[in-house]
Image (cartoon, rainbow, N blue to C red):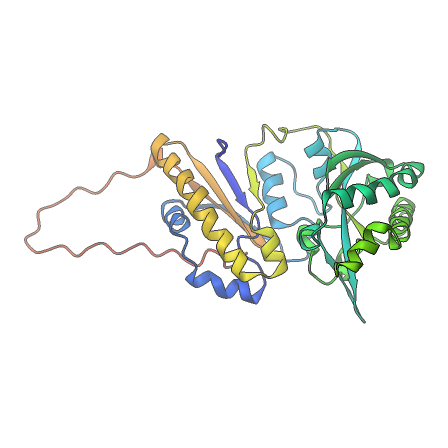
Amino acid sequence: MPTVRHWIIAHACADDPGLLAELPALALPALQRWLTLAPVVAEASHGPHTLNAPHEQALARALGWPERADPYPWAGWQAQRPGTPCAWLVPCHWQASLDHMVVLPPAALQLSVDEAQALRQAWAPYAASEGLDLLGGEATRWLASGTLLAHWPVPSLARVAHRRLDTWWDAHSDDPAARRLLRVLEEAQMLWHDHPVNDARRARGLPPINALWVEGAGVWDGLGPSPVEAPAQVWHDLTPAALAGDAASWRDTWQRLDREHLGPWLQAALDDGQPRWLTLCGERGWRCWRLDPGTAAPPPRRRWWPWPRRAPETPFTPSWWVGL
């Protein structure tokens, strides 16, 4: 595990009733000890309908970025392209019903690298003709640049995946660039409708890839630490199960994080005496604890007492997920 002194855990809890029901009995001994030893030093709760998810808000704060309502330019920052309008384009599936739509992310679609590459190659020439350059990135998250991406007020998939696409995130506005970008995205839908990749997916009983989600759009000003130098890192391990409402997988992943990461990380802090920060995030807010073993109060002086002493009780940790 890298030497990181501040971990931000995305989707440590969620609004899903099944996940919330798991929390009171969830066995997380390392986290329990962490919260017993460390005081809360900062927290914020802005509700479930902000464009920036709580873990994005917490990371931006750790980077020294000013608070903002519009989405942060994560693509430009992660790709280290200051001054250039950038965004991540994520192939996904829009599932339509009578009165709403739900967006399914790549993690729920069994989208292979070859499928994603074929769809990208089919759309890339048209995107380039409209001023969007596909620069690289991952198989299921494509880095793009172009002036159309300078302002796109839509949250990341971590905010909306498996959720109703309600109007609070709606980017359809009077902005000519936004309308033009929508037309470019609609062209991808038309190109892919009868694409061999989707024909093969339908034959296998899988949802077709029928849309692109734009996230992390904007222009990074180049200020602050780079991703390699960042004072905090985000754990996204819990996100897929949390968004899908898979309580069993989410519980198992939490216990693995507690056992394989939080436990050793806590022990490292106690061994070297250096401070650590842990930020837990839900869908409404975040809360940060600071552990500073080097300034721990000394144990109280023992006094003679003729009667047997009662064993100390385990300190009670309040429900850490309240408000998140």
